[in-house]
Image 1 (cartoon, one colour):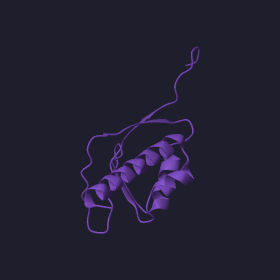
Image 2 (spheres, one colour):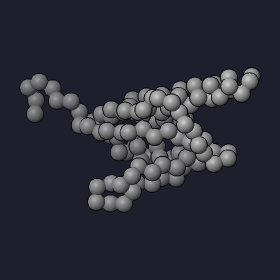
Image 3 (cartoon, one colour):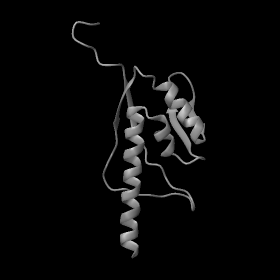
Length: 113
């Protein structure tokens, strides 16, 4: 496989991984979600209101946080930028593309508060 084909195959593989990450997160398929993360993955979810940033080390810690924070009554709507990918990472590391997570309460049903 030539270098261009290999690069395109790598980008396609990353896009599929990103889709699986987002889909399993939205569907709360925690075992499958865990499969999208490296065992030594790290996550930085920014600042929690009134607290410091949420930082996690390791797949198990990330999945534990997400599965606890995204209870069954919480619906996620994930938005991601799907344009060109510019990948930069330290040698031997694979960058994880950021996703913007917006949490919302369950949809209201007619006639209910």
